[in-house]
Length: 166
Image (cartoon, helix red, strand yellow):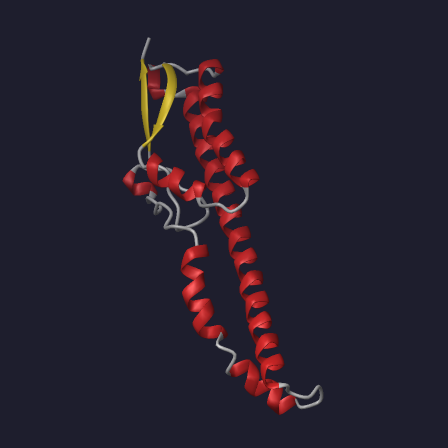
């Protein structure tokens, strides 16, 4: 098998999702990971067509897909963690602003609690979050569909393989 190139079937969706990662380091790591298959395939054994032995190239593609998905899952989780921290910080800032506006005394716990409820954080956060969330990622394909899967049920990478059997 003279396989040297793999195309992502939903590459545009995947690249759009990666471009939405907030950290440049995450984007760069993902683009390097996606491009890595082009470096791996030319130097990997292709196996034989006898007995359907796909050899190292098929295993390299499976490993590559798994690594790409694992990294996306990791970065999605990190993004969610940062988003949660940001919403907590935003809520606290709005609460503090509300407290200073109506001059609630330091020991007035009931007044402080009322300010927290009425600070408007629920409205602000509801309207800010859509701008910070990641776009929808590709969905997972089950193994019965012939696709490769990873541990996260919300992810898939479909590949189109081009090459010649020699």
